[in-house]
Amino acid sequence: SEKLDEYVPEENICKNLGKYLPNFTYGIEFETCHGMIPWHHLVESGLIPLRDGSINGFEYATLAYPSSIVGKGISLACHSLNKYTAISENESLHLHIGIPKVSKSLVSTLYILCCVLEKDIFDLFPKFYSKTSQFKARGKDYNKPLIRTIVDSNLDTTFENLAMYLSLGKPYEGFGSSHPSDPDGQHKWAVETRYHYVNFINLLFGNNKTLEFRVHTPTKNPYKIANWILITSAIVKYAIYINGLGKDYNISNLKRVTLMDVIEHSYAGSYKIKSL
Image (tube, rainbow, N blue to C red; front, top):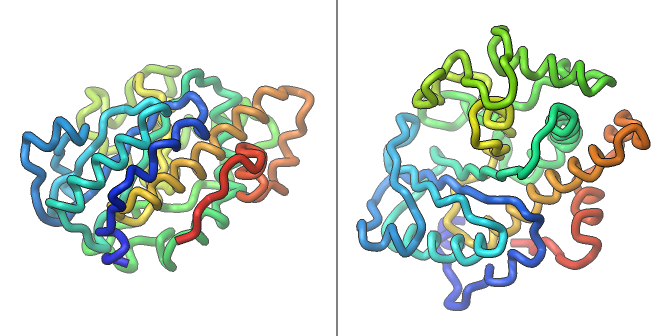
């Protein structure tokens, strides 16, 4: 609810978040519909105001936080956002997870796992969140399901299919190359294949090497964001684990994995996702 999203506990509820997380980096994009955070508060909150043509207000992007301080960053950002901005159903929260080492086999494993967990993820959010054109003001689908026909039993083939799809059928020139539809890195909205619930563009193109989870509802609630970071980190961590098994693991076994399996494997009972 809006009331819950505006509530910020006095205590820093995220202060211990880092001890549960892998060695990833985290960047969060908060879309707003109204309000403006004063400049002198932006520095202490670690927020950068941006303009996004798909929303009426500012998009506030955080710095790339290491896992050790992402909890503190969430708390500071939410404090300023709750004080000075408003949100509506037309906005979203996007989370970028920076992965230290990327390979073709890891990207393929991540893609297959995200396809398998897709229903479990969408079940966490309101109806039609996989088809936002049903309720968003601009009538566009921003969190489309992944393309399952890309998946093949061979990881190399899966990667080739994914690269071909993401580049809109144009030749893929390897990790670090520019996307054919956005050669200068300044027109991300021109890359239509980014509008899936998980956006793989930055893993294959450019130098950022982040996986973007686009499917979260707009929120300024640090509890919700902390839980989402834990859930998505578990997905990436699990894919890295499976990829590390190499030929000792039959990739077809992934189709039986559930989101709860992933969470329990990643945290082994050390953390319980809090219900709101």
